Each structure stands twice: as structure tokens, then as C-alpha cells.
Image 1 (cartoon, rainbow over the protein chains, first blue to last red):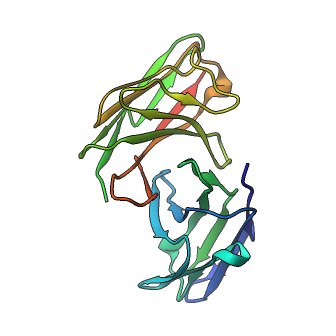
Image 2 (image 1 turned 180 degrees about the vertical axis):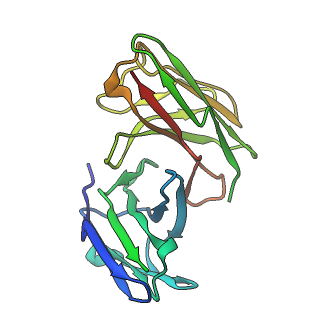
Length: 108
Length: 115
């Protein structure tokens, strides 16, 4: 099946800093999503981005499908950005395969 | 998006017992999915539950352990049977809205602890 690798596995930032999270995948995809899992376990949809670039406030994402990677940018980070960020992809069968996630800690 | 609810939100159960988790969506959807997230781990798909057909299970998951029902287009249940401490996990349902995209939305999850 399709493989998903996320980096870095852990990231510690000071409030106000910027960061880039990366997601590599091993095959062409119909779907690529970025999620934020908050401390209560809820998965929040950030982006549905099988290709191209999107922005939502301080967050933006870019997927280069031909090179099989996606980037999530967080600017001016806040303590509320802390949590685990997951990348998930669907190759051809509607089933999402998740990466292992990036644990982000933003310190005040 | 969609409003997805799960019941219960959390539970503590004794080994050997069973727990049924409910997932309710505020709109009709064809495709629903059940995932498991073990402590400190990523999410793993258990099965796909489409209305009108039997659930399709992923490798490593079997119907006897995780029976699933999908009686209509807005509701599904997942039962965790004959539980052991290794079943302690967060169980999440997700849906793909029938909008021609593949985007999935997740419920809030059920946090299960087996003692």
C-alpha cells in the first residue's frame, strides 16, 4: 500500500516563530488532507489539498503531486497551535493512510 | 462540512466485555469509516461501512472482534467485542460527504480504556 512519511517527528517553537512540516508519499493520490489533533483527541480538518496551494489565515499548504510531497506552513505560531499534525492520503480506494504525525509544541 | 457525533465520548470497561460505539451524521452519506488510534500512535483504518452492504475490513481486523452495522445513511455502530487492555484506544468514525471529492471528516472520537 501507499506509504506516508512525515517530518520532523517533533518540533518545539517559541510563540511567534514560523515552521514548515513535510509529508512525503509513495504513490499518486486522489486525496491529501492535513489534520490537527488537539489535546482532547479531536481531528480538525486543516486542508484538503491533493495538489496546488491553499491558505487559511496563518496556515498554508502546498502539494506538489508530481514530486509526491506536501508542505504545511504555520506562521506566527501560537500556543493554541500545539498538538499533533497529521498528513493522510488516499491512493485510489477512498481509504486514508495516515503518517505518524508531527508533535508540535509552542511555548509562550 | 458535516456535524458528526459519537457516543459514548469515553468509557472504562472490564476485560471480556463488549462496547458498542455509535456514530451519527447530520446528513446522508454513502461512505463511513471506522479508525483506531492506539496510545501515542497514528490512526489505522478498521473498516469501511457502506449502507446496504457488509463492512469491508482491513488486514488485521475481523468481523467477530469488530462487528459493524450501517442501518441507514446517517448512522453506524462499531462494537469492540471481548475486550482486552490492548483494545484501549481512541475509536473514530469518519465520513466522506457525497460531493464528488474525497475529503473525509471525523467525529470527536470515543476514548476507550479497558482494565
